[in-house]
Image (cartoon, rainbow, N blue to C red; front, side):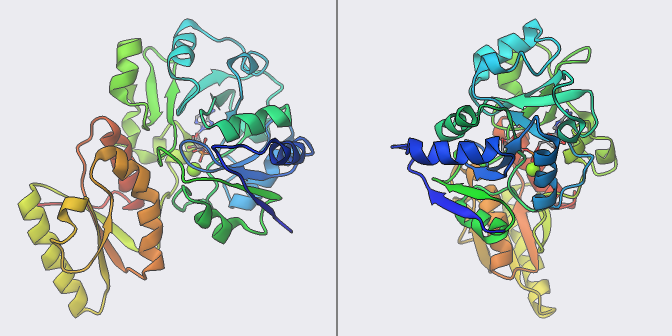
Length: 346
Ligand code: TXA
Ligand code: MG
């Protein structure tokens, strides 16, 4: 397939390009576009055949439902049974932005989009290119992250062009994504709201608006992970070819332990790498992958650095652990999955 690739400047959005790509989506074609979280691989959410193309391009299991993107709050009504008060509150407070809300779907959403579920996950991105594109297409856009299934989500255009050129009809190339981890997913259907995937809209922020909110308990351990309520959270995910381990414990001990492991690996001819905060990057006797100076920066950089592990031919990577609060919860969730829940406690 010939992929049309166009650059677009977020500071000066070229509406001719937006119209061209919007028409591609309206015709049932696939387009990769930027959002504030990660790049999405989009197609018409109401068109079963178009949605099928997404699964094919990603190599995604067909029971994993797609997330639907809208340009405006008013677009939700046509897609869902009811918008209850809690959902209204969240939409007012956090949309446009990186929060995905589950609703009971109307029949207009085909099974191919919802993965056969009765619910549909909807979000309204804050990225202006994304919203203008959805508006130009005149349909809701189903768009999972634009990675090959199982790999880290793409936050930079170079990731996408490498993996997806030839697999989709169009790629809109813009700046790097802002948040870097995918949207928070919330399910309001139970006794209390449940976070199915942590993201940059944090548990603390959601509790401020809704009161009691909990995290899907199956996200916390490998054993329970097969029961994750968001189907995509149970699959092998965010996995570079390198074997990743999280190292937890007091910083001084952690650095010592990692350096011992690096030495053992090098005796076996294995190349080590460390995913660490900038302040520690000269503490390790191997190549380091710098996550930045704050949790926000680490979220922004995480997928890019995971992708770089493979580009550098790393066999075994150690990741410094993060406190599991605020954005740290989202970072640790992605890290645990990329490490297949292997954690070394020191
Ligand atoms: O930030 C994001 O959310 C990005 C950008 C592109 O918007 N999208 C994204 O999509 O991360 P995806 O498909 O990679 O992840 C969506 C997750 C999957 O784990 C999927 O299983 C879950 O949402 N999901 C979708 N619909 C669902 C539903 N009806 N019930 C439960 N989980 C659902
Ligand atoms: Mg994904």
